[in-house]
Length: 394
Image (cartoon, rainbow, N blue to C red; front, top):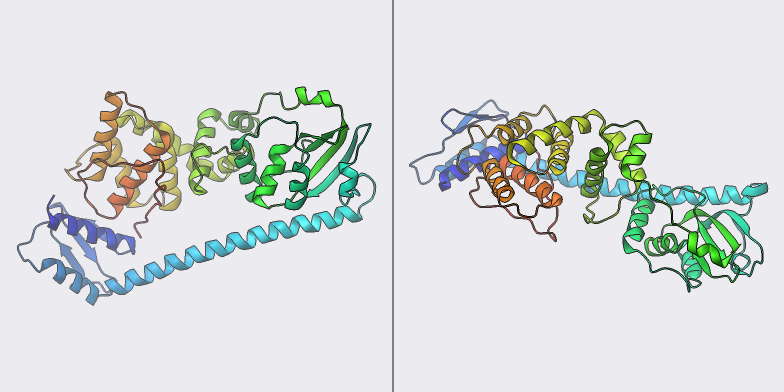
């Protein structure tokens, strides 16, 4: 692919990104309509060595440079607003917990022991007793963990999952809290306490004391509820596949590691938020798998993310997915052709395939396509590489 063609695709992509109408011509060039009404045609071939400079100069005369700067300022502002919104949301969550603790302290009966003295909890208890709704802070968690002298090895994956639940506000008060045996040794709750100590986020929990030492052998031996179990209970269908999609979406949105455990409540919330768009993307994922053997789950997730961020009815989205599925009219240098060829070759060789790699390659292909960048090289994605952020054509 020549430099002229690369330039033409790049300019068209930049124009789409800022919302200027771009039409693909039968010749392969582009017609760009400026807000002033001026129409500029960018050809794939041009003998004028100064053509690139002249094209940009002509577009700038009609506001191209100013529009790109305004677009970037808008994106920066949106990013700053998102950071501020997250900060406010986290502050409000902590204030809510503190308010709940104060209300509990004033409550009567079984709800009035939130402010129980720590030394009383850590004292020796010959008989079982329960303290309801105790606010566990970072400092209190660290003190309780000093009694963690006779327990199983910690499971780092479980701790990271609990930290995600705490930071996202999905950790809920249940009967599963903290337990100390008759010796005052921590018997249950080391993962939860470690997550609180590391995240610094307090939460309300139930504390049991004076538990028989032999209880240790039967604590947490039940079967864990799967994503499918939770989604089926809420009336969703095709729950195992849907659960895998929701987990991947949650990981992508929060920039987590692929091996990160995701709380069931988080997966359920993604399914609810995704609605029909999420369910429809599953069908497209299957079609993409049948077309060139990309893994169906990341293909479905990528489709959903494109629809969510760019729009299902967006012209660029429709053309992109159509070309990937059919493979029709894909010329050399089209990033969709590169992706199809690479995935099919890997499938034929029966090489190992990673879901997050397929998601990343799919999104990289979209970003190249929407930016008008041509590519003939095999794309790659390393496990330590950040997941691509979806570029918008406007």
